[in-house]
Length: 219
Image (cartoon, rainbow, N blue to C red; front, side, top):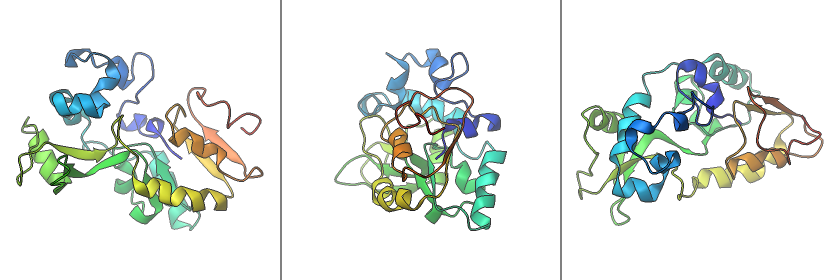
């Protein structure tokens, strides 16, 4: 289980660190509150702030960290059952993790779709990148609807793959590694309590986590 903390040394800010986190540095976007930039209702009415931020954080500008290559090493040695990531930066893919071993719980920039339910036209990374760096709000070529990267905004459901795999995966775990996550966002944070009671859990994080219930006595 990994979060934004494994990508900060790549130059990508996390969300909640005071002073340096993403939510502390969004004043220039004229938001009613910082989290609004990732709320689906706000995005549909005012997509410009998100796409302006996306230009700064877009995949392809950053390189994987030691943490990403550590997971790749576990994969290459046949020790990685699955990587559940909160990150949308695609650095797990860049480091060479097999997409079959990856659950991007909060979605990914790797693909995009038209938001109109009657359309849902898919678009790839290069298509979205061209429009974002041209300072254009991406519009569907088929219906002119708003196109959004397949990252999970507040107010949207997590990918079906997340729910489909967690039931079987966490029963099989013989060691749960948790790296770079504050464990404040649900339902991702609750995964720590899904492993068998005798399964060791190792937390590697810069700050204390906000999730005491599942970690009490175990880490």
